[in-house]
Image (cartoon, rainbow, N blue to C red; front, side, top):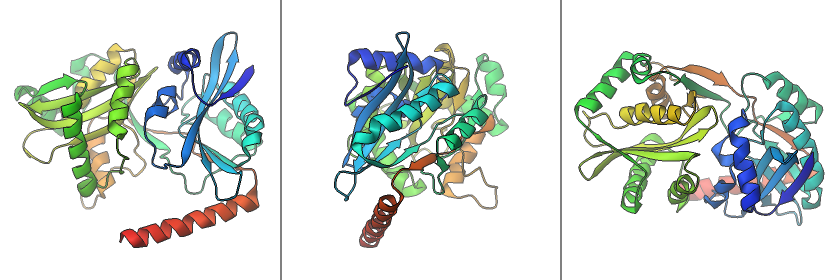
Length: 353
């Protein structure tokens, strides 16, 4: 296999990586070349592209977030939800090649999250151990999700939902809530307001300025890979969701809903419609975008578990991924940087409080 690292994905490389998506069991939207245009939380990082090609086809690729450290010349390399590969063999061969090609960057550690589930998981897990990767003790990414079988007609799909979820979908249909594709700039601004409010009430993860505009533009530039759906009453935005279509899997990425109109279902119909959209694109499963905290019980649910309880209303099954791993290449320097990062994080938290 021919290996290469590029500072940016030119049109031919981007198209080659995009062609890998339908055949990669672990395809994730954050591994698509277009994700470089989405602002990251760490302003000091930069992206580089890695790819392995054989017979004119990309077999494995990685979008790598490189962050320089206070130790001159060293870096940390993160691969969020990847590398993406067409088989466990390609994934493991790619990681071995990647370490060699990354050597001039002087990485202290290489952190990965394979996003691999089902067939091949044991092979990936064993291969990571052989390559010297250890399971992360504090992984930044969830290793469990909720997957819903959507390869069925609308009526059987609706009947697979929990009773109260079916009721809310039907209620939204009777109310004739307006469902729209895409978000124009005005709609995007309203969505950002809803998301900001949700951060305060449900603890949603903060996003940097311009994040959702870039996600919207990602979907517009690569429409076969993602779309926005929004629900409206007149000119009032009730809710919106971003869905990514990645081969067999559709993945719920982001969403927000209004706190107004308490008797009106905001996003139940959106997900039902999104599942049908995704099925028409060839997807057979709908990934709810994480389920690590579970749904709790009626006597006590955290903010995250309340969101998960909503997700569980659409049925599905819990799926575990091969968890996040890291290969620490320079243990002493890595430990020093991690200690410094914890100190800085603590100072920022105290200042914010």
